[in-house]
Structure formats: structure tokens, C-alpha cells
Image (cartoon, rainbow, N blue to C red; front, side):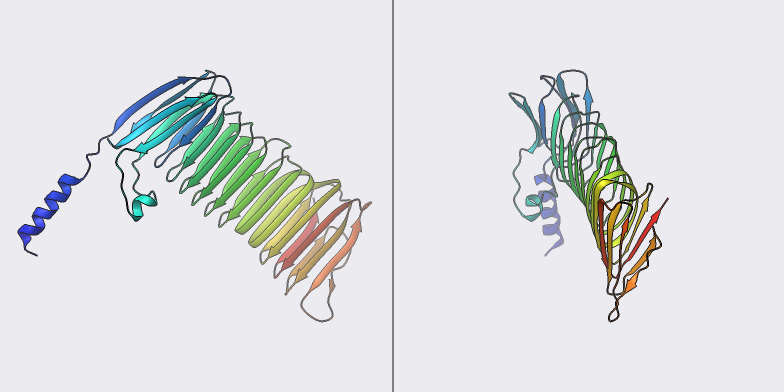
Length: 321
């Protein structure tokens, strides 16, 4: 192709590109004290914070003339959506990789429920007492000083929840979790390729993890369930009367440090070369006559609780403070 033709085609392509310029936005809507705020975002960072006014206020910057902030209200529900007025077809647009960036700050009444979704970007939520539901692709979730139930999911991002209460249902892929939970409500965590640091007083904790190291600072446990593949568990806890622990691992290491006297029937099994270390009592680990398996079975105290732990090619340690 001749150089002059190439230059002409490049010039035409540049002229055809949509003009992009940032623009500031401000929207305010009066609500009651406990609205439902639904936000559909595309790309960029969003901060959501509770305040004492019965008003939803949206401020921020859109980085594309073709981007549009659409705010609607229907009863208790306030909907906030970022749209692109131009319609692009093709693989990248359908995957959401070329959406216009917008950075927003959203002030909501303290009692609001928040429902947030986004493709690319981080979200920071603080001082919201209603239910919080977040789904992200490629982004970090930070929630602090919240007392409502939390349902947080992110792919390719971490989750940080500080000074939170209510039921927790948190899932992350390719990102860790750091959680400070201050209430008795149930906790359910799922992690793939991300470490977990948990501090809680909840008696009911369920964790499923792959390739994760877990540091669990627990309180008095009624029901603890751990399912792990590759990684480690360091759990500090006390077992309530009649409480139960069910834990299993493939590879890795599980250590349970009991801070109070244990009353439970204890059954521990290690398969395929796994190892059991009992520092909780004088009971001995029994090795199978044939094969690389071993087991530990004994009753501690009155035996009113139950502890069942097994591993394949991993290590299990029981000890007391």
C-alpha cells in the first residue's frame, strides 16, 4: 500500500474516533431513611458512604462525552446507572473492556440497602447499616463500619471488611480477605487463590478454600466447617458444649489451638502419607498395619461435642493454650 494512502486512512480513522472529554456530574434525590440504592457501574472507582440526611447524592466525573448518568426513583428504590450513548459491537465491547471510565461518590442514608455491580474498578463502602450486596469483576471491595448483612463477591480482587457485623457471605477469586467481624451472626467464606485473615466472635463459621493460607482468630465455636485444598489453617478457638468441628484438607497443614478445656469425641484421620500431631492429650496416634494411613480417636472431657478432621497428604495438629 502506498504511503500516502496509509496516511489518509490513519487520518480518517482519527477523525472518526469519538471525542472524549471529562465532565462533572451532580444529582440529588430525596428519599426516606431506608431506601434501596441500586448502582450499575461499568468502569472506575466508586465510594459509597452513609450520612444522616434522607437524600441520595451522586457526584463525580465521567471521562467520556458519550457517557451518561441515569438516575431514577420508584418507591423506595433509587437506581443509578452509567450508560454509553454510542453503541459499539464486537468482542471487546461485549466483554465490557472498553466502557468509559467514571469515578463516583455516592452519599446514602445510613439505613440504606446497597446493591452494587461493576465490571472494572474498586468500591469502598462505609457507615451503611442496611444490607450490602456487591458483585465485581476485576476490582477490590472495601467495607467498613457496617452493621447489616454483607454479600460480597469479586473476581480478580481482594475483600477487606473492617468493623462489620451481620451475616457475612463473602467470595473471592485471585484475591485475599481481611475480615474484622464483631457480632454473633453466621459467616460463610469462599476463596480461590487468596489468603484469609479472619477475626470474629461468631459461633458459626463455614470456609471453603483452594490455595489459601488461613489465619483464624475465633471465639467460642458452636459449628465450624472447613474444606481446604492446598494451603494452611491456623485456628485459635474454644469449643462450646455440644459444639462441632468438621474439617478436611487435601495437602497443606491444619493446626487447631484450643484456648479452653475441650469436651468432645475426637476422630482424626490421615490418608496417603498424612500426619497427625496430638498435643491435646496423651492419646496415641494409631498407624494402619498396611498402607500409609493413621488415625486418632479419643474422648476429651465429657465428650458432649464432636470433632471430625481428616486429611489426604496433609498434616493435622491439635493443641491447647
